[in-house]
Image (tube, rainbow, N blue to C red; front, side):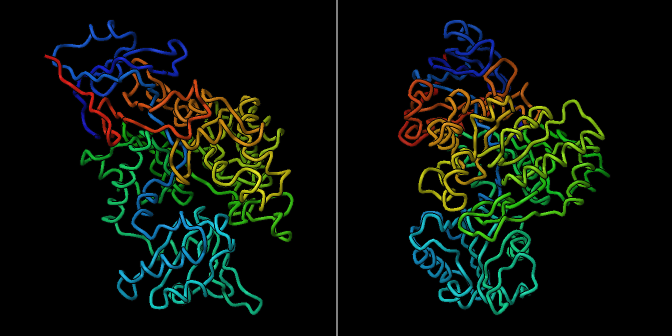
Length: 528
């Protein structure tokens, strides 16, 4: 995909929702060199394209801008597809059975890796321990990563191989001081480094991730990966195989190198750009490591944790702001948000920037005073509505962790918009599907969460483009923007309660159909 586009095409007979404030709905668009050059009614647009252009009949379907997933771990998602998939398991025994079966096909001594388990979906809802994994994978170093990425479980062989003991930070121990195999935060990084795949496997993972993204209508991603992932993207771009547009947020340890090389936010091509700096303030609710002002309901002695000491966080935030780099700060708990806002406020007071577009990632438990301050500081709320679909409601994981009162005010998408804070949506790949996320926000269980279909789609398109300084080239269907489009099976604006059953029929990137749902009649024909 990452090549000079020369195709001229027209897409007509559609209900094209542009998210362009000047022309909200059109019937047809024309495309040249991968960009939209005209938008209007069928007859008007057809007259403008030369003979021999490709013509696509949209069949009266609703068309929206290509989805921009504002928070992913994109290559990791593809790599996870190469591991033992545990996300659909209903019990721990089922997950362990899959791990045992998977180990049969892996040479002894090599890592057995499972991903995506969530004890909140199990009848026996507890974390996996070393003893559980020892019972099914005694001859391999073994890890099972929880869906959140903030907690992993390893077996005894892995503990020995990694040198984990009772003094290892973020490694849980039992009453006798022995590691239980449950790792959080910094200890997870130890095992991630040990089972890190080579570049060939990463390239394979990227190809799988692109294929999945196309099937879900995702044409752009904001990725939070390892620094080494950038070369994988560059390789795919050079080979013409980078089928999504990537805004690459680099990790905290890249700050010095970025500063020395003057790698400011936004450098790159139409397909691959260096984005902001991803910084962690706290952990996650599922792993019970998000920083809370009051303890977890199901762990009364625990208020979560911080990834950085306060002074260190302040220094990172200030230096990043001074270097003109966008900040994307992970903050989930209300106390984590407190600390994040204080660091950002201090940095901006010392060095004001008119258009920094700093972001808070996740922002799951903001208060109204938090939102008022975010509005004043012109911060962006980068949130994940699919989390509500996965763990919200009256009997979900949020209630277990937070209790009912806090659950009713977590992920308050509506309140974010009411506070006039820019809201953008992403998935964190849990799962990726934008339609699922949009459905979860539009039909959320609590009033503070529910938004309109227009607002939800905007957070996944036009406003998501703003979060990467790209609102003039993507996120709307307008003259001059990339011809990245999604054809839907239904009308989400007329029937918002049915979004959950709607599907992506076609995904179009740079004017080229890159995905067509199986069973759909191909609509392309070349004119005489």
